[in-house]
Image (cartoon, rainbow, N blue to C red):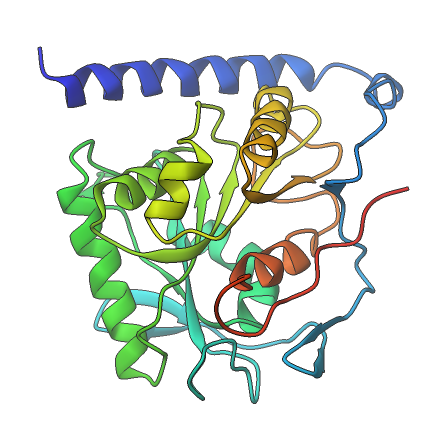
Length: 285
């Protein structure tokens, strides 16, 4: 039995456990959610009205319509004058959806933060399913081809060729890490949502060119506690990392505050070694 197949089975089992535990938690009262431990200084929850400063300019939240680029890639254009790269071109944020998912479902939830970084591209996973959903292959070669095509489509629209940010939800988070570990795609920042499997060491992430990592989940998601602990571990190892609470929600990318990922994505695009640094998302009292 191959290592890749074994890893895929293990991940599928983890996802099943996460979803099962999350569905069970739906019946827990909202009052119970308030019993969670007080958040650390590095646990953040973005306020809807908050604005950020990026490259000396004040940014807010932007309305824009989706478009198709590269023939089949769902995309949102950057906010006016956006540039987070060392050139005058905007970076690219790529969103990788979850198992049996649709790019069009999660993409709008990522748009606001991504628009302040540059282009947002939301490719469909390589394994298309009869009901219109799709799932990523275990072999990272196929997802890498899909993501590379999406990034090239953004470049054709004027995006920078510099490494940007990957936002991966659930299975998409695992795929993101596989791409990084394999070296098939480069990213400066990662935002991993509800993907509760052990992550690479800070040393390996740094070696792959990753400078900032955001881990995120809702209170009712079984991934919440493991990801919070993972953030603490990565910080001890020297990674610039933030844990972001999505609020009183389950296994989803849809935060209780619809704009909760905005500053997290902007922060992930910053780097201590390249480009203008974005501020850290504001800590929750």
